[in-house]
Length: 73
Image (cartoon, rainbow, N blue to C red):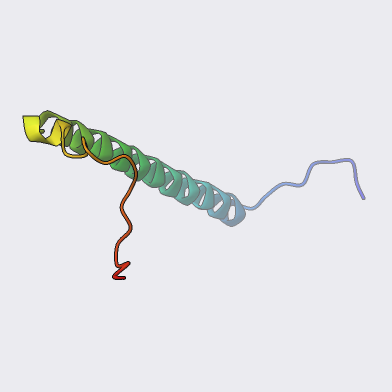
């Protein structure tokens, strides 16, 4: 073991640089996709909220609890 730092050949430096570049682009792409999904969900929920009618406010007015479906006796 020597004390001198190891010097990389140009091919090894190029491989390290390209690997880091690929990792950077993939992580940026995933971040953009996550932000796009979040923004799309917020825009859709706000659009649906603005499109409500007065009947939507009273759709569940008489129900005290959720009714069971398919009880048939």
